[in-house]
Length: 459
Image 1 (cartoon, rainbow, N blue to C red):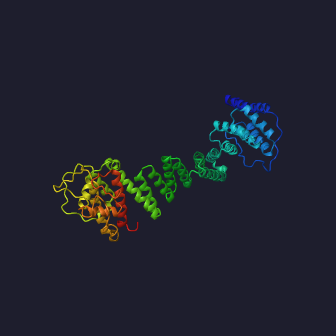
Image 2 (cartoon, one colour; image 1 turned 45 degrees about the horizontal axis):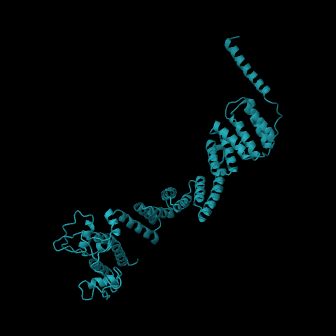
Image 3 (tube, rainbow, N blue to C red; image 1 turned 60 degrees about the horizontal axis):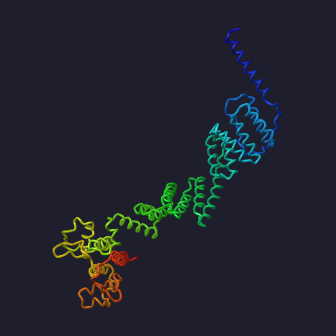
């Protein structure tokens, strides 16, 4: 006999001996019962996916039949015996997890499934069983993740319906809990419930929008904006999300970005409410771009001519833009002043006068009588736009003990007092008192309101 023939015979003999030894070592087992109606039809059979001896594969199938017949003790004995012979055998470890699930011991089941997944991370039966154990333990989000991993590992298992049911059930419960907590002011609890709902349904735009509202109430504006941007990415047509993002950005002082958000909302669904928000955001964005000196005006005890020109030029830009330009308006001393653009605007509109030597003197202090004359010129521009409103102040007669009717500045003082721009105090106008920043802003507020009614009659 040739050497090759001898080795071949020896190899066959070795396999035969191994099978004999395996059968000899394995405990004797009665034939499993025939199962026509499985007791646990939702359990996923932990099939053998690696090359093993036929005895092990057969015992794995037999143990599963015992389990589906309801004989959990025999099934456990079979799978335990397999593991003694083949430690870390993933199918048997997974099968023990299903035995514990059948016994309604999800904690013990989870331990077996977790061990199986540690050995074989993409073994679908263990992932599916692990999901079921987690679900019974109330860990819905983790259960969904494990079930989705099982479906990805083995699409033939057709786990899609289970996944959808779990998503719906978990999301519905979490949304209800989140809304209830939010209504009762339990912000941390509401946030957690919404986050869990988002984990179950990550493609839901409205969930992220509602979570953003909770974060906004908690003062976490950056998180709220992040959730809203994700909601918009998921559903660009969600007008409420665009508006909500604009509101959050306005609160956080990001006026330019807020204007963009409102503009997107207005493009989707034009409404007066959104238009008003957009105008306000643009106005605030314009103000935010102004130099620091402008923002300091309100807190100054005394304002200058440059300050007044800046406030009038900024707050009444629409009115001044439409005013006839004064010919030959020339000032020579404002080129390097921070308020130069607005000084030129008010001079050209005839609201503030340069001095005879063509200087403006932007650092010169402003008295109440000076502001009265400036404000009266603004009122004249408003009257041109809306003549009917001029009757409220053009022929007004007021009693100011320190500015009698014969005084050269009386007409201007009477107009601004009648129009509510500069009030009297105990019957006195105090014409020589310096104007404070707060007083200037209050006067500008009133002029702006009157001008808005003239420039935009519908407002």
